[in-house]
Length: 348
Image (cartoon, rainbow, N blue to C red; front, side, top):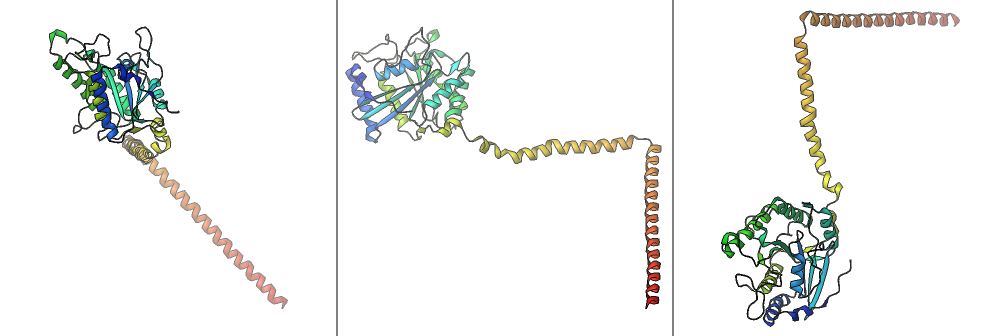
């Protein structure tokens, strides 16, 4: 698939001046490291605010968001360029349908990403989700299985609907900490990350037009954070971190060759089959024969031994008769030969 041509990032001009300045400074860190482009993959369940977050970052409406319309059914790549730097953001369909993992959507995403490099992953969920359920864990496992071990090392958690009042009048910071910690623990467990690895970073987002603003017109959260520059800054931190970007090639999409994947198991299966099936059966048969013999009456055993001995005697007699006949034939043959010799002498 051909790369999406980048358009001028005019949406930057829609942000307040302070936000524009902050974004220019943050993205400048990438240019200092000779990174001229950045590709961000946005994933998560449906209805959590993925498309709205893409629109907020770009500063324009690049994906349709409606409460009465299902979200995008296929990935959508948005490419924007500014001052020699290109930002690629890939919006994706929800990974859950009917309470189960949508394998078709996952496959569509993988094939859309063929021959693309993923620098950062935004895993989007709602701050007001309150708990991590089994379906969340399935999503985490499915993504790790589909894109390899480095997927979650390039990921950051994006919690939307962040302008909320915690239930029961609790502290906002405490509520955020518990919600993010639950997701971080699930990612560490389901993605198989080591305890020595750092936690998956998280940021808070509020895409609603009702989001509070500061005196400069910048959108702020209940804790006073200007969330858009904070989001972009965390993206840059992940992109410049120690984990290598993911290049999605055909091997990653299709998986290892089926023949190569299974051939190493063949010797193990044969050994296991012998140890667990053949040998126990042979032992059981031998045991049954011994038990059967022990349970037979003595007269039957003696009768069988008598028949066996009689049969052996008959065989021996037959062998003796055969030897005797052969011997007699040899003697008779010698006599006939001697008669022939006498006749020959008479002829001379």
